[in-house]
Image (cartoon, rainbow, N blue to C red; front, side):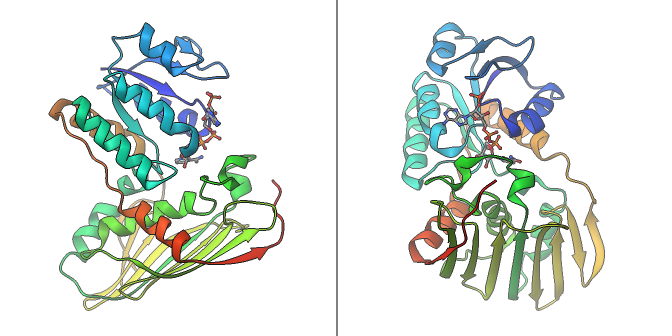
Length: 303
Ligand code: NAP
């Protein structure tokens, strides 16, 4: 199937292009990029130009940040194309409702991806937790924004989500592996005085689960979650790629790989089946953290 990639930035180059190139399902037929696209692939500066010129491209994968992504998603769906969205699937929940309803009306597939759910130990953690009683959970997601999002001012603008941009990855795993749904009961958000989105956040969730998100971590980076259950302790480390049961290795691997190939395989499957996959549970938690959260002003942040 021919696919177009829009927004040729960090994640497109790091993950989407290699995943498409190595997939038997996809051929990268065009890019939509204001800054030039990729060598050897036809590029369009605007999505409407691509949609008009290339009716043979049935699928569009959108790798832009959430705020500018919505208009492109709407244009692609209106033009009858299947659409794949980077996470988070929108700047607001209502936007994604619009896209979901439009995809349904157009009879095309919409896939709101959550790459962290494809990490190597997530399926095993979900299977292990099924049917168990969780007494307590702790999420620690602390990374250095200067390393992972160098110069990306959009992340601290309204709609950029700040530390919830990585934090929503943790919540996408959490909402996938827990046997019962959870909701935000309290939140505290730290906003740099010169920014519109938080640099750190602490959440309390039902079921005695706590989350600690921080963009100011230097040195070793932490993407862990730990649960105490009626049948022992489970830990997921390295963003869902390492599983430990009662402190001993129980699955996964020490590297991050395979998430994006799995997303593209799933998209191919959805298109073949005429289905969509739009799970907004992680984004509901983030929206509720903004709604429910106390706001602290903290020191200025510059890249
Ligand atoms: P990025 O490099 O800052 O931006 C991606 C591309 O989007 C830009 O290169 C640009 O493409 C286009 N773009 C940016 N702002 C735009 C605007 N206002 N209007 C139109 N186009 C715009 O961001 P990224 O790190 O790739 O992240 C993009 C999405 O992927 C985010 O939702 C993020 O959460 C998700 N993601 C990122 C990572 C990561 O490691 N960075 C990991 C997983 C998921 P052109 O120059 O080609 O037009």
